[in-house]
Image: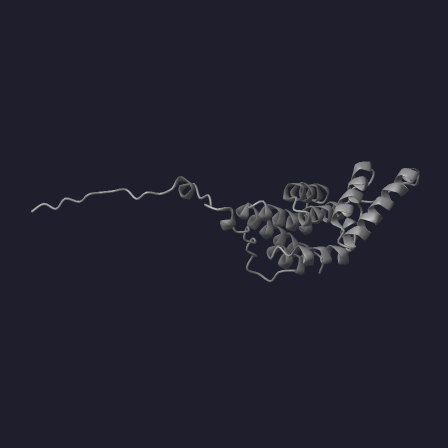
Length: 192
């Protein structure tokens, strides 16, 4: 006795096949990148949680100590333009500390546009300001600029990890977080 099966393919909507949510309210925020397995520094911990407020507090407390050597100027370079540029950075720092991120972006942009001094910290701070203003593309650009200025600076990599995560590039964010953590570990071992 033969049994005839009737095969009827399951109807699957195209949006489901493409992985697109049916309704806008179904869109979940991107998950934070997973931290590496070893103990994390405060910056690594804040970035792995995508805690922008904690990152801001860390950047305020570290001030410009990671910029050592990048700001050496000759006496001839000390001009009114230079004083204006440093004043713009100072105004940016005050706005950043006070969480006035749009003003901080404007002031840090004035500083960067002069181009006489290069500061990875300014790029990292402006990157965070862009994240706080929901501008992850600009945040990623500034984090990458910080890395160009200071290639082994963990903070530049941490900021890239957060920006990549905000851009829903989780695999890249996880890799960047891991690389930042490794750089930080190496830096700590070398300073002992």
